[in-house]
Image 1 (cartoon, rainbow, N blue to C red):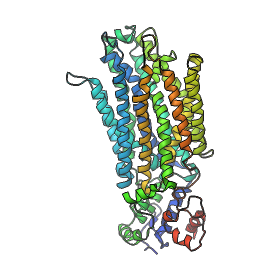
Image 2: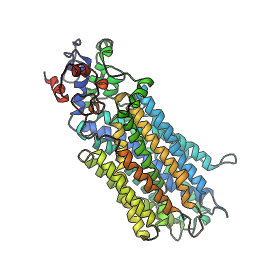
Image 3: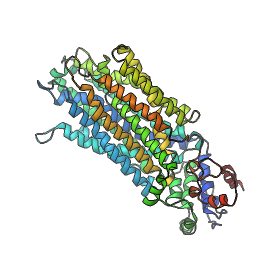
Length: 573
């Protein structure tokens, strides 16, 4: 039995004493985590969603605003008889791929570090990188020694590292603080802020376009947008990019002061006393638990050696995922994200091209051209993306993650086949309708679930690393989409038809969506299951693995069949 400590009153509860009567540290850990799993949905959950969600708002804004900004960069920096105010395809692709390249590094680097040094120490650092790189982009210019494309690419790689770090950190921090009943909705709400970020990018683009209307009306085409028109467009793209730093600045303080997740404290730091205190503090909206330090040190000395949760190591990592039972799950999450992002980013980062093809990116002057692109982006996001995100939030804890993902991939396969093979038959209105439906089922489908599931189905000691690997696989897919597949759309381009191969590109995307159907079959259903059950620690469940079960392994071998509910009810004793 742990030593009881003095102190504590109505204002400052002595959380340590809640579990001091329990001698087994594994039991104390389970009872403490049950408080998070069964907590009623409250303000502390809303706060976690907002703090994590603002990061994704910023990420999506920065990623998808570039589709509008590259059009403006062409107007400002690529005038002349050769380009006529249109950015070359190679430069456009380089700028867009730069973010994805940095994101891969950030997802892997921050994912691994969050498992080694802790979630708290890494959270906020990625937002600082995003804010700094965003402001640097908005102040960038060309010079005799380096082009504007080179400068923008550099800063977008750095920004991508920060964006990449946000994926595993926001996902697992939300997951590890969430109540089991509504964990999917909480994680989905964080990710749904992507839709709001895309919407904000369109709104800001619309505002600056209307604000410089008089200047933009002086030019009939991008190639003649010089003088006051060119100056206006130069101010516009800088404003659009720079505004991406504002929400990040608002959220930074709260990220830097977030407590360490109790699951990390228990399973990796192996500090039972601190973990229990942090849970109580979180549920009472306090920054972190402050246990008696003497009791904490004594608890770590006495309890840590008794904790039977496996310690993290490279050897253990390879052994864990070397088993097909666990390796197939990582393959399923990484493979699904890869197949998804080939089409999702291949289409999403080229919204301007899609809009021009369906007649929504044109106009008799520069003002109407940019106005229609901004309005078209807002329409696409509002009609398809935002509803899709929030339908996932409303249903993922009832329908389940796997059915939503599987159904999404199947429907997207059909839609891209219709768009590709029927490209010249369904007309502009048909293409627009299919595009909006695709946006809906991207987000009420694999785009949301590929973010949620990796944050749940892996053990705590490798949860961040595994999420980072899965997310990085997706961004590798987006790079392939933009560098290898997306550039095919201009094959054989003429002035009358700048995207002659767009139909074939859509057909290729259909094939990748079909691949996602098969990788989805490898992932488990995670709804309404505790993270410990999904990690194989709970006897009597299909996921149970004695090697992962901590203190229950011995009881299981001795014939005990106590359920998680029975363990949790012991706190009332």
